[in-house]
Image (cartoon, rainbow, N blue to C red; front, side):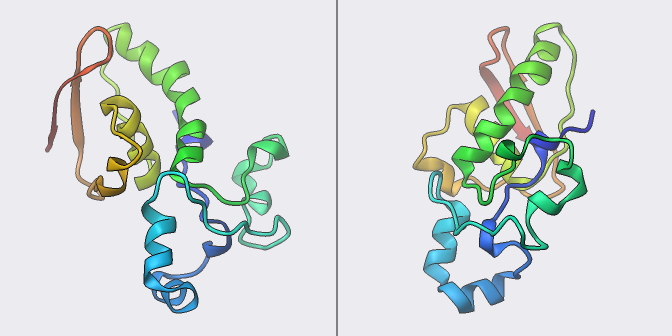
Length: 149
């Protein structure tokens, strides 16, 4: 099932810039804070900008107030959680196995929720690209084990 809630976070004014350009413009430390902190967003991107999600066909049918001008991980989690609650958790509770493929920050947000990772500790969570992460959960969806394949 494809869903916009699992898309990558919106980097605001950083959209369309590569890491080197961004570091040159704002400084390495500030870029690190924007990329890894839980609740600090990069500067907003003007909705009229061609890189804005407001101009992305994938969001054309969404109410404009659901389309952010920039996101931090907290906002990404708020976007991802309804998908967890409406689709993933019910499937798991009914005994199904669920495979989630998503972008790095959407997965970090889900991991924060599933594992109960603190706001401070989420900065250090690395989820390798393309390496499956398997969670074994109990009947209350609490983590029993986690491993990379």
